[in-house]
Length: 459
Image 1: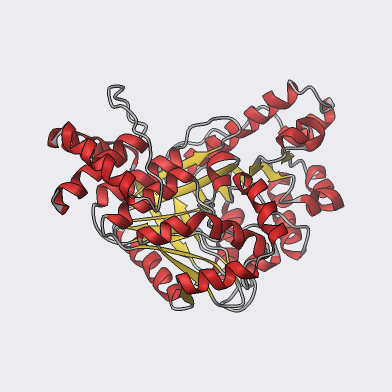
Image 2: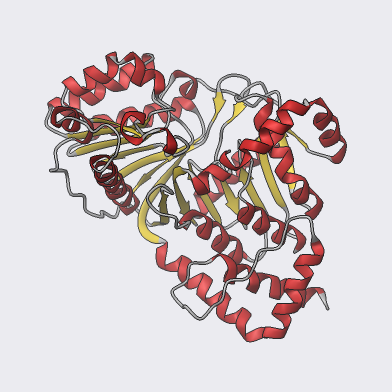
């Protein structure tokens, strides 16, 4: 088989496997295993038999699926530093006229949390619809200390803790709200990897957490505004039917807020196109973010695939996606944490090593962060045409257990800035080679390896 046919039919196979297209006559194919080229060649042989016409149909569907979701009317601003992020968050809150919705995994009761608590209280007292939703685990100190929570609720701000173990029970403990969203008036959204704490605002190459965020003004903000309200309704419905403890009427008001809320309208504020995507596996088993990744890679056809993945323990479907494109000859780069920079210690890196061996054999390049800061950036640049920002770590949790939000754009200037950030970060990494892999593997104890085998599907 010639290499040209090899590429064509692999791409056709890829789309039929990943895209949630409306057409019901496209069968799903079993995914090949990363690192086993023979399985992939078998798939190619199958696709050759099915014909060239199928490939053309799938390519057209992929492009149409993406084009339909790329909505015009936006302006974007890349926020590569904590200082810039802090300024934009403050300015957006001060400019709010109708509503402020904040959704976060991590919210600390430190000086940063206190500062924003004061700003949010001021806006709530002015009569704005202000709401806060945070994760019980990620914001556990904020929840347990209670002073800032009480101050916000006393100002009239409902504070909802996602996966409150009192009402959810411990059997659902693996589910978290991982998105990082500040939504103002349904017209502005700031999203990315940064939570609400001091170490997100003071990061540099050698200190804190190195993150990447973006401000988006336009219709995408109204999408996230409505998704925020949908999450509250879903949580309220679930908790009201809980077989565990239920909230009292007063507790419910302080958690969910009033049923009346600000209704946003999609307001165009620029020319850039944005595809906004939100996913919460607890309430829906659809995987729109995975579908978006697959589609971007398909329609670009060629060009580098450059991705941030701070805790790179990829879902098997995503691993297969990367393997296919690496075998097709595309340059696939992943920037992730090393043992020294990972904030969760060596166990996460061990879990990564257990999942990426096949990817390495297929040609995926994994770059280990070498600075003292924690690499916490999420997002990527695909084919030099698309850039995305958001909360997805490209780990298994993001597909199975964590709510995530991303925003995709083909705005040329934004893509250029995102690529420049990636290129600069790449300078501060080393390539994970077979030699480094074997050296690090020996440093992991047997007990830890056994433990990771047991919990890896939840990472």
